[in-house]
Amino acid sequence: MTLAPHLRPPAPGTGAPAADQATDPATGTRRAAPRRRLRAQDVTVVDGGTLRRTIGGTAVGNLMEWYDVGIYGYLAVTMGAVFLPAASSGVQILFSLGVFAATYVARPLGGIVCGRIGDRVGRQKVLSFTLVTMACSTFLIGLLPTYGVIGAAAPVLLVLLKITQGFSTGGEYAGVTTFVAEHAPDRRRGWAAAFLDVGSYLGFALGAVVVTVLQITLGEQAMLDGGWRIPFLVAGPIGAFAVWFRLKVEESPAFEAQRAAAQDAGQPREAAAGATTLRSQWRPVLVAMALVAVANTAGYALTSYMPTYLTDTLGYDPVDGTLLTVPVLVLMTGLILVAGPLSDRFGRRPLLWFGSGSLLVLALPAFLLLAAGHVWSTLLGLVLMALPVACMVGVQAATLPAMFPTAVRYRSMGVAYNVALAVFGGTTPLIIEALTQGTGSDLAPAYYLMAFAVVGAVTVGFVRESAGRPLPGSMPAVDSEDEAAELVRTQDDNPRLDVAELPFDAVPATAR
Image (tube, rainbow, N blue to C red; front, side):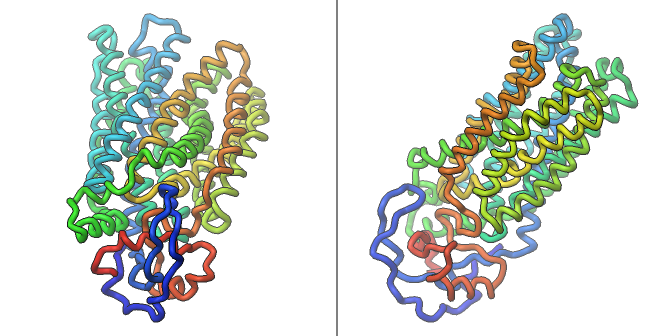
């Protein structure tokens, strides 16, 4: 992707004044309006090869993250038995899911720390660090001694490594969504961002396949005796490949443009993040938290908790419970790839509303089908859950970054996404299992999800539509020179472009 000031001559009629004042969408304050109109050299022209490398380099990190989430979720029963062998099966499951939830305690800290650094020195460097840390932590879990070898120290070490994973993944998703959003053309941001969550669910499916193959070939006792280590050790080579791929990705043009503008103004290199504060973003942060809570509560119920629910609550064999979720995860990737482009065409809000509404309507029928106990009814119930999740999760990666300005986008995403995930998403398996055991009702999860669906439907009303529009704090991004010229020509009539809101003061001097 390249900024194009050196590629095009100025467009005619660029001297016409804009309105006297405009409202800054990032802070809600009044500021001086741009003193000129949009010109062709103001527009970022996206290089297709760079965009593809960016999507691939970020998606592999999501695949790595969710591979770990997947293998731990599918091995929850086994991990409880290995690291807390003297406890009852119910306590073992709660312990294992509690360890899973503990991972999310460190995510907000990771999001804040990595986000602050990423807003000041660059996204690409931080994302390489988060991926290395994530892969190493997963690999080391496969080397842990068990309770039978070192006693109570074994579960303590497991918790510490999972917390380390949480810290790194706290900076991972916030960073990759920011990174892809800043690389993508405005009219295809939903399509590009959808690949991030495709990587997530493919990683989860990969974890399910690895665990299933081992359960079938080794058997339950062999898994308890040490077979459980193999999926974690596989993370080593997967992580090495992912890091190599990510190192080939270039820094985002939105960040580079803002940093260059700060340097032109004689400010320090880190000053690109100093103009707008995180505190000024509290309204969009709260809205983003609610969206994340709804989408990921439903998502984690379908992915991380479902193996435990099928095995422990509905009585499926562990292998059967795992196998039943794999085709649904594959279906999810296809639905997400459809949801992203649809949101580019029809808007993010309609897809989010449809996802919340369908979750409210379908949650109870889905769990009734699961409780019927037949293979066909279980698959159908899982599919009914997958539809609303795909609509919400598939649009999330394009919606959230567009709620924040470039200067604080990474850190704002880090706070909003990870706090919501820590409080709601990561605790979903533990809360649902506790509700199911406490109420004795197999339908308790459905009512829990329905409550979140109502919250989601209300929250979407506070979301500003961002499909096809420039990111706050960034100039427009397009696919071609011809599209840039058309954007300039139609700037007065384009409903997705408000010239008064464009940050001309953030354009480097060489492009002014």
